[in-house]
Amino acid sequence: MSELNQELQPESTPVYTSEWAQGLMTEHRVDVRPIFESVDRVKGEISKVVVGQENTIDMLMAAMITGGHVLLEGLPGIAKTLTAKLLAKTVNAGFSRIQFTPDLMPTDVTGTSVFNVKESNFYFRKGPIFSNIILIDEINRSPAKTQAALMEVMEEKQITYDGETYVMNRPFFVIATQNPIEQEGTYSLPEAELDRFVFRLKLSYPSLEQELAIIEKFHADFDARHTTQVDKVLEPHDIENFAKLIEKIYVRPELLKYIAAVINNTRNNGDLFMGASPRASLAIIKTAKALAAIRGREFVTPDDIKIVALPVLNHRLILSHEREMEGFTVEDIIKDILENVEVPR
Image (cartoon, rainbow, N blue to C red; front, top):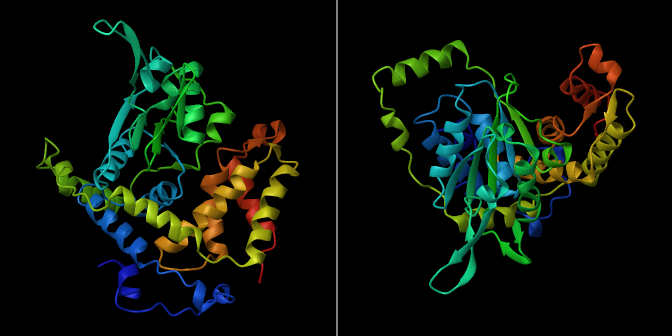
């Protein structure tokens, strides 16, 4: 049993001792137990195969529930693709994987018109993007015209082809991966497309203890039989119900002002060439609500906002030329902003 479930047993009613629950009226209470219990089951299934990555799974689930998409960035071999595939296995919904390559065309993603010889007409053959959970592996391997095919569908959850609009089924969740080191044969994602991702999650190497656990688990499993042991624990309607619950998570007005102040600081910061859009502020509040529910709370705290702010903003901001030449990173500036913008008391 996880620490979360030990603290909040299903049969008990959470007791709110935090000042950030002040103003939460009894009639506005939200039962978040279905959310954190379901996410706990998802993590339990994935942990049969993947060692660690609990925080990554929390963020992936927060994005999926709120209707966002995630860019997973990390070196080869640290289970980016595997984690995405296993997460999809825990949901009883459609899954498709698209391997982005330099010769991939937009119609290979969205679909194309095909001539029906018998009926002497054209019909639209849907591409692999028509699914519930889509893994786009090495998204930066394809050129801009192919990446642009994702712009409409990621934002509006629909495809327009030859004057017809095709709406995606819910849930619709895109997980894309990319390798930040290898640059040969890759194409940088344009800012407009990066802005479609609610999070960019940077995965790192496992710790020494986790490395040992991986070796112990797989040294006698050359065929990766463990990857078939993941069970489905969520239905599509569960995701929709969770989204409705998360909308009702309580946020004190002071925290909304805090988010606005953080975003405004990015737009008036001498260390940044480009700040964050209103889409970023909405992403922060939505995913902060989701993270609060995943961790068993009906209310958002400043820590929830700080946790999600980094992956929400790290791909939306552009450093000034001076700071870039001095060796600063976007993450450095975000942390500085979060430290200097006054947190409500």
